[in-house]
Length: 139
Image 1 (cartoon, rainbow, N blue to C red):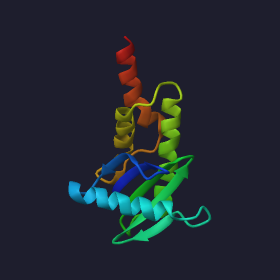
Image 2: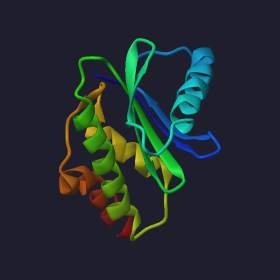
Image 3: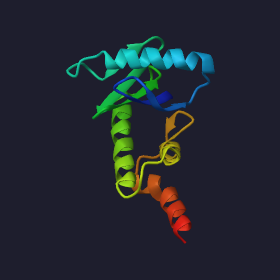
C-alpha cells in the first residue's frame, strides 16, 4: 500500500504532498524533511529503494524534481518505480499543451491512486476526466 507521495525540488522544498494514511500535520513536516534528506543525500549510482523506519521509500529524479513514494513492506518496489515514471509521462502528455496547474496534478494523481492503491495506469483513461473538463471550459 502507498502511504504517501511527495514531489520535491533539489533544495528540499515540497511542491506536492499526498497522504493515503493519516499523519498529523505536526508530524508531516518532520517526516517530509527526514525523507527528503534521506533521498537527496544519496548518490546517483545508488539504488532508488530505501528502507526507512517502518516502510520503504521509492524515489526517482527528473531534472531538478524528485518524486518520493512511501510504501509498506509488502508493496512491490518495481511496480511503484514504474508508477512514478508513468505519472511523469501522464503529466508530460497533459501539460505539454497547457500551463502547469497544481489542481490538475491532484486530479491526475487521484485518477491513478485511490486509498493508497494503484487503480489506473492507462494514460488515456487517466486523462479522460481532464479532457472532458477542458472541453466544457472551452465551450
